[in-house]
Image 1 (cartoon, rainbow, N blue to C red):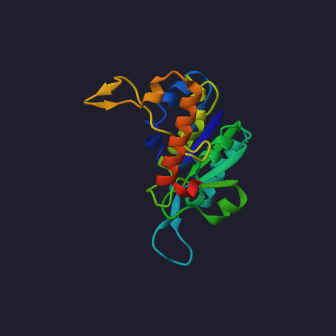
Image 2 (image 1 turned 90 degrees about the horizontal axis):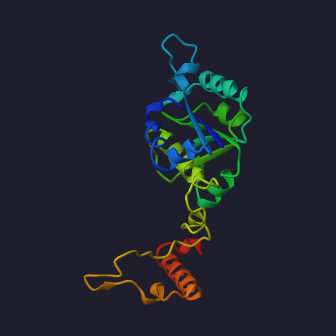
Image 3 (image 1 turned 180 degrees about the vertical axis):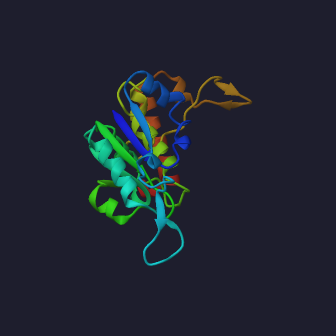
Length: 223
């Protein structure tokens, strides 16, 4: 999978993709992540990419021309399955959406900034708008990093144990059950006997019941 990200703050995306699972995915050749500085596509003397909004009002708007230049330059080289705009008023990211996007080949992401982008970009270029929650960030870079991580870990071969992702919270609309590791007893706190029984059918049933109870208590909206 190839993911290209258009941003006015490329430095914000250096860390998330150079460590841990995302680094491993790229090292294995399973994922490519390329960042593109929007200012490189500005034709103005000082590489300006924002301007005042028509009609007045507080806040600047990302200009049409630099964004269009960036998108069309990249589209001339790569055929994208989706052009994604990270914005607070987009569709809220969930596990099912991440699953679907992980099956795509190439994705182009646009990080919003200021008061947003010129609406004509959304009308003529963007195919999907995504939010990571009902709050506002300083820019779309952190949202893009979250989205890439959620998608990238699902690519076959990225995780050492590919079944791990299938047992994550939200995969079956349930939160994950409690998990335990050594020691079996600590300060009198014991691991549930069923997990030590070796009876995998009982363990599976226990985990499902625990996931159901946890979801009822914490996220009944998922049921």
